[in-house]
Amino acid sequence: MDIFFEKYLVGSLDTDADPAPLFRYAPEWLALPGAFPMSTTMPLSDSAFGWNIVAPWLVNLLPEDADALRMMARILDVQHTDVLALLGRVGRDTSGALSFSRRGTTGRSVVPIDSDAALEKILNDLPAKPFLAGDDGVSMSLAGVQSKLPVRLLENGQIGIPVEGAPSSHILKPDSPGRLWGSVHNEAFCLTLARRVGLPAARVTTGRAGARAFLLVERYDRLQQEEQLRRLHQEDFCQALGLPPGAKYQHSQYRGQKASFARMMDRLREVGGGVEVMQLWDMLVFNVLSCNTDAHLKNHSLILSADGVRLAPLYDVMCASVWQNITRNLALDVGGKRVGEYIEARHWAREAEACGLAPRRALARVEYLGQRMREELDATADDVAAMPAGPHALVAQVSEAIDQRCRTILNSLSK
Image (cartoon, rainbow, N blue to C red):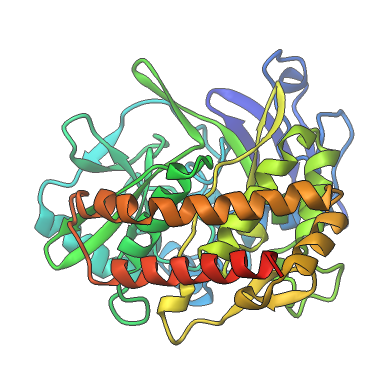
């Protein structure tokens, strides 16, 4: 299998290697001034990388929901366990910059969705047809367990489906009226609040298609350059740590070394992103203060380029405490504590020390962000109400829950 960045051959997987496939960078890629590594676990080199390194990285590009993966495989007539066969069929537009088997493009091959009714039907059909697998010219995939769809937002505001290897510009996340009522507005609120308090976060807006609401998330791994939409390369922290998706939670059943926020910090420093450790700390703090219990390794990423590695913006943040059926346990502990409202100054200090940070400075960021978030709640609610999908009753509950969490954490700091 060949792996491409736009017109360039990045490298190839030798599937005939014994006993397992090997990956090698193409000599012409290694000689290219703008070359970047496929992963921080596979630095640019003329050495071969074994399947034990390559496989976890590839698996993390596919959806994690078992039913969605099986459905996609059935439609494509491949085994759901055959990672290479799946990526060969759906891998022309994935997370990051690389395309599998066939070259991706920077062009505008897009099939416009011509009406709200047509978009509503696509959203309703997504559970039975993940990522529109099997549609003519469609080849795309995203990791995660939520239903979602890569799309292209056109100049006239119309939404289209990229085909023939064209890049998507946004990720469309439909509502989940059963289990996660109000999820669209919840995530819109949290990410808008993050930007308001100064954190780098994905830009979002909302929309409606008939009875369905949806969130439109602008892809931070895409860059508009005149008429071309260029891909930027990224990998999540499971990929950066060489871990499978099942290891993304600290208390998962994975038998290897456990996930932790300190491991993310250490890896960020190891790959050259040490100047951004406080930004990563701010993301941890924001997730706790916003009651987001799903801030696992795959919901934090790195952007890779020829110039080095930097931290990706915040994404996939929702206030979980407004739903009764969602765990109160954090994806990653803070100083040994799993439940956000029970985190006190000593736990923040303990986590800061494990992360190699000065506790006093780290706690000052907790206090600052807690105060700033409270100040911006009302303005954030107004921002979300002004988005195309309009207001939602859950927003008041989200705002109240975050305000309560901030007050609880701020009070604990003074004890």
